[in-house]
Image 1 (tube, one colour):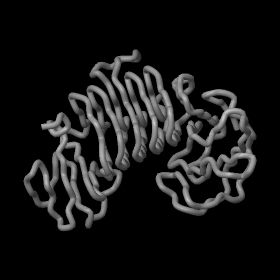
Image 2 (cartoon, rainbow, N blue to C red):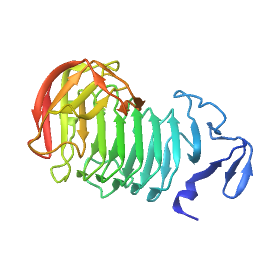
Image 3 (tube, one colour):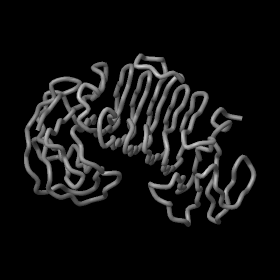
Length: 298
C-alpha cells in the first residue's frame, strides 16, 4: 500500500453514482463530515467541507478537517480535484510533490503546508515542489502555500488567492522559494515584513506589484509588453495589497506596463483570463525587469 493510501481514500467517480475505493464499491458516502459527491451532483459549496469530483478524487479522509499525511505525498497523473475545507489545511509531515493533474483547493486556513511536524520559523528541510499541472488555492484566513522548508516551482500553472488580512500571506516559505518555470501568481494583504518574494536563486524572473490603495475584487490587473502583447490578465477574489507574478514572458531588460480596471473577454479560470482580450483600464506604471525579482509600486 502506498503511503498516501494509509490516510487518503482513493475514490474513482464513475458514470453511475458508484464509487470505487480501495478496490471495493460503495454508494455515495460521507466521510467524517465530508460529503463526497459524484460527477452528476452539484458541489455543496465553500461553506461545507466538501470533496467534489470531476473525474478522479483523492478524498482527504483523516478524522478531522485538519488533513495530515505522516510521510511524503506525491500528486500525479490526470487527476482533477476540487476540495473545500471548512476547517484547516492539507498538512503533510514530509514533502509535497505535485507532478500533474488539476487541483482546486478552497480552505479557511493554510492551503498546502509542508512541515516536518514542528512549529518553527527555521528551515526544517521539508519541501513543497510543483513540477507541473494546474494548482489553484483560495484561502480566506491562512497562507495559501506554506512550507517550513523550501518551495520549488519548475512548470505548470499556480494561482494563489491569499487571505483577507495579515499576518497571513499568499505564500510563506522558511527556506528558499525557487521558480524555474511555469506561471505563478499569488496575492495577499498588507502584511508588512511578512510579505515574501521568490528567491534570487530563481532562474525565472518575477515581479511583485504593491498596490497601496488595494486592488478590489471587482477590478482587473493587466500586464502587457511594449507591443501590447499580454503577459497576464487577472482578477482577485478579494481585495489585495500585492500581487506576485512569475512568468517566462517576463524578460530581463524588457519594459512592461501595468493597468487596472477595464474589461476582459475570454475564459476566466480562478481569476486568470485566457483566450481573450483586455480593453480599457487605467495605465498605472511602466516598469523594466531589472533582476530576478523586480519591485513595483502603483
